[in-house]
Image 1 (spheres, rainbow, N blue to C red):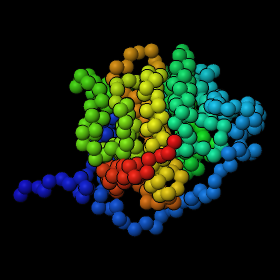
Image 2 (cartoon, one colour):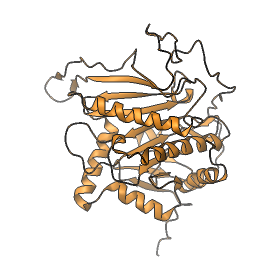
Image 3 (cartoon, rainbow, N blue to C red):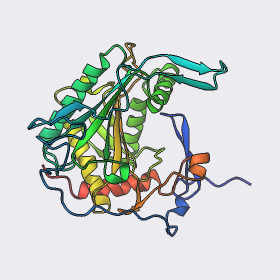
Image 4 (tube, one colour):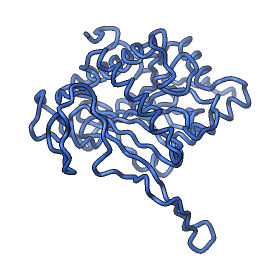
Length: 352
């Protein structure tokens, strides 16, 4: 008896992530199951444009004792409670000599970057021109930190919302520059390099082109960037932003591409807020080529958005049970999530 054709919108299946060499189980038939789990509190009320108790607002005292300048644009400073230090020894320990109890020093630099002096803004509510300036500072920080002899990777990331562990609502991100290449980009490096060697082309160039043709997972796009729910998405409303042009870092974008990246960032974060008509939490980060001094023709610039919300502004997805012990799993398909986000994007484009 010939098996039925696999229906991605109906049948349980798993999808392959070629960027990380991992799989995700998709269970479309479970999308309407009842929920009696944890319900999060939803943030209410509007933040003031200046908060005298905020340690990131202009002129205020930070927790580490330093006082912020009266900055008018962006502000970058070394984290007062940095997880990494540049003077950490590079010594490697192998206790017992069997490769079982192994540790090595990890020198690094941790910085905080405030997007704006305004306490009440987010990427979704900032002006395009101001987001452009943020991008230029991101690029400058990448070049500056990446040039340090001990630094082989620069990770720029934003945790937005208390649900994602953000300790302060003031618009800001973190920049961690590390001696080693962290696990997630290290996996992506191996996969992109393998694809480049086997196919003679770029993995994300080919993937982005295929998604642009199919359109079912696209959320928004312009002439330089696409935002889409990846075929292999793990989080319910996960988004991948990829440049159309093959380049590895923020610093290599042209004067024409920077405002288009600002536009797509504002579009994505604005659409998120419309999903449940509430501020949308997420962790976002840029994956750029390593700064180890080697050429990386295989690497393609991209950004990941990982939001936890599942069914409402107060119900989040948890990674537990089978997902911790086996394989990540999702109920709503990437296609249905993209359709919802795309409809919100088209219906009400963000005002400048």
